[in-house]
Length: 474
Ligand code: GLN
Image (cartoon, rainbow, N blue to C red; front, side):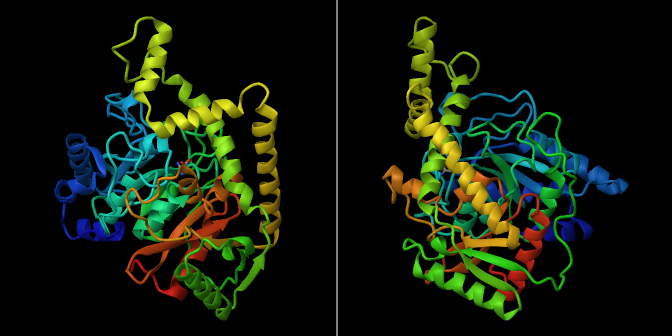
């Protein structure tokens, strides 16, 4: 069992080959088919890459991720491999190019082992919206793994990869990490290139890693971050080593009052939050409850803006350019209509309709423009808080993983994202740290948010917090 990349590196040092490591994971994947985490295993290309890595190890010129076996969320393109965003409308579509993140991982000798199930077009919080069936939580198969990157979280938690990639538009890396006891990080908007990520809501989407250690998370960020000519929203800010040695820095931590006092938080999650705050104060850090009186606006603003962007992004799936085409249609108009009707699932259709509505003539100002204005207000207040704090601390989710089919009302499902959409609305980096377990032994995370491009501070703080609290994941 390789828990983190440290174990893989140790194994390689003691003579285990990258091919053997890949075969180990291939076997684990096969044994865990019931989780439905993998949509496809890239056995031959993974083994081919592993052989290449072994040769480089022998020559002493292997990359920084040599032997790290990685799974990709099924919305990240890998040249000559299928990618479907877990949607029937893209079933059997093969990508012509690789995402920049994939190129950067391969250049450092990571081994890409397959593509992972997710909610269709990353829309969901439970991985129950996939066209290819739900994913099970490996910690308890009756529960959801979270979403939308449920396959990425489940595969890592079940030990089927050393690390996985997900995408996060509002919740999709951090909540599944919280539900599976793993680390899930969404970087600053623009820190990692989105080139080759199938777009959901372009001003919110970011790719990020799921890992079993903070060090692996920081290392993957280091490899993936940085300017990319192919994504004009990627930042040219220089990258750095994202996790440092322990320092005696004292942090100023803001806890959002309306969030901490939110009645929806399970008492066990709240108690753990309180524990963290107490330990931080005892260690000499400054913890302050600050007001963020906009909690009720977060989720509605998020859904107005993301559905608008989605309705535009998803208009390219018309039965002509990509993937699925209805066989029952005659003529162009009918081909568009029927292909989209038959190809998209119910939740995606709901989003496209809502988005088209908020962008339509007569409603645009009332919804879309208003939503953008609220986004600005949220950003301003967040910047104000960040002017005098290093870190914003909240629970990642109000509670632990819920049962499959346990949340059927879409609004209730949307409210899952109450603490996480903040970072996407404002573009801040945020990570979910596995911090506690409830009485039944189910994990939950704490969310650490930092100022734009202050990922290093975020990781360093997490290390300090883990040291104080003891790592759940150790
Ligand atoms: N649950 C949110 C949605 O459905 C967030 C998903 C995501 O981050 N991709 O939009």
